[in-house]
Structures are given as structure tokens and as C-alpha cells.
Length: 83
Image 1 (cartoon, rainbow, N blue to C red):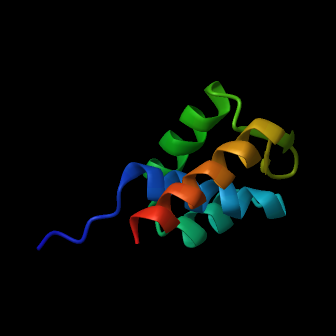
Image 2 (image 1 turned 90 degrees about the vertical axis):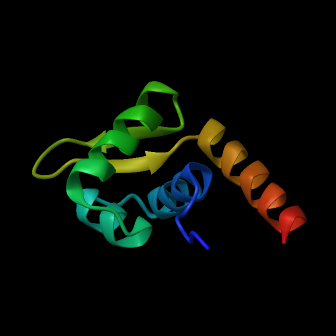
């Protein structure tokens, strides 16, 4: 049986992590991703308006937007229903 995580699970983990305004390293650890994958997901979520950059220097920090919080709530509801 394949135990790979779904893309929605990874997105949920990133959105949840970004509630605490982390840098990319904390996002990587929270979502169990390598640097390249974390960058790709963060870019995707930025383009969709689900996260925002709140600091550039000395390190970039991310925050879940209101829209991202709403998406996270819905993803968690769906995950509960499917358990």
C-alpha cells in the first residue's frame, strides 16, 4: 500500500505552519519537505493568495492569509469526514 501524502495534506501542513509566521526552514520541518519542494509549494500558495510574505530581511517569513485560514478550515473538515 502506498503511504504517500496527498498534495492537500502537504498544503494543510504548510498553511498550519504559516500561522506562526515561520521562515522556510520551519516550513520544511513542519511539512516534512526538502528545500526545493518547500519553495515550490510556497510559490504556489503565494500566487493563490493563501500565504503572504511578511518580512524579507534578514530572512523571508510567511504568514497564512485570511483566505488561507478559510481554506485550511475546509481542508481539515474534509479530512475529518474522510477518517
